[in-house]
View (cartoon, rainbow, N blue to C red):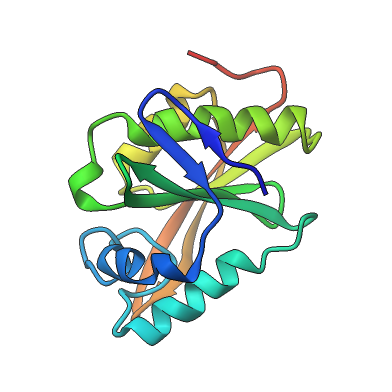
Length: 170
């Protein structure tokens, strides 16, 4: 897998050395509020998650660790082509890092992997992610109720799609 450098970030493959940093993110209830699983309870759970991130087959997706100044601040990737997902450490919110990481990953999705579209499934309460994706050119394609049961609480979904050639690269 490749490494991608942006102005402020390094996007790179995961390693087991990332477990403590990811546990810091994935055990934070605020960071996990709109994620598809409850916050991680222990590092063993995070170790399994990082191992799964590392094991994505070449045709099944592409996941990147997001580093800023040598510190892991999150992940962004394509899971089971063509779905995109991302999570950032709470300290990294609101600084444009997700947008900066999203741009080259979308470039790869279309130019390297030849995808016709990239899709996202977002909790409608997650205004920041919806803003990010709409700003990148994603369009809402549908909504569904009670799609995720996370820790006994139901969440809804907004479905978004970005078709190759429709995106805002700025």
